[in-house]
Image (cartoon, rainbow, N blue to C red; front, top):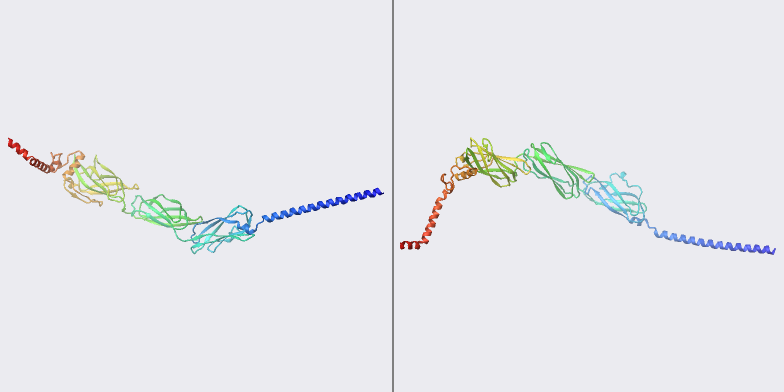
Length: 458
């Protein structure tokens, strides 16, 4: 019995010891859990930032306004890029443009009214369709981006409204156009605005002429600059060229202008013009040889000049026509023509040349050559308005005849043998003889003593 009682006591002691151990373990575990929980709370508290701090790390990184300068009532776009440089996402409820002159015309079509999140390191783009309302001036509409948890991001944007038009003018043109002749014309476009104009198309319109090119495209004319656009115009009749000019101010706004240029038909004041003068005529072997000068009295060059005679004259070789070449302004060149004719009272002399555009031009002067054939002076105006003033003498005719290969009428050989007076060197005989007499007299005077001594010795 005592033994049984002792065993029960031992068992009770074991149970008490086990209960005490379990209680210590539970207490230690609770302490550890509390410590860990406290540690976690401390870490979370150290990494949390406020909504204001998160919004302060969001900024506007880029702004684009199109067009660069609005005309009144024009539509355009404002594009804004926003960047989150922080480490926390930011929620935004609405993006808008706030101004009474530059604004979103229909707020119901504002696409940025729903909730959006801008993550860390992310850039997003907002594009608004706006309208510019007068008066003219410089405005600062505000880009507004409302945060869900804090205030709003506000950013002013400069927008200009100006009605100044572009200018078009004909800067280069001839005083007059000639039928079927090509002349150059420059159309100048001046952009005095603060924004570029783009996609310019210039089209000449009308009838009675042709143009090269028939249309011109320009990518842009920058702000505060101008550009010259050349056209080559060939009229077939009097009329008017209407230049239709289309261009864009920004992507959404197309404009159109017109510029008219009358085609006045007449004689150009700057064109080359030829005058024939200093004529000399010689008759050789039944044909006439005519020499003279042709002068370009115009302002521009005459290219490929050719001189010839017309009916009743019949050109013969070797000089049925004479190629002079190019004559610059105020330049001249000699020519020689050979022909036969039964009547010298009205001989037309034609000069043909080309201008810088390749147009073929001509001038005809008519002369009475009868007095030249008789060896007398002559002065006569040409039928085309050109003038002639010259003289033909025996010596000049002889010079012309010698170049053709025959003896000239009224001329002479080297010493005038076989020719009349006034030809060759015979006209200088009095001077030559006088010079010889003077030289002989000087020699006799210097040697007089020596000569007298010789006579005395004899």
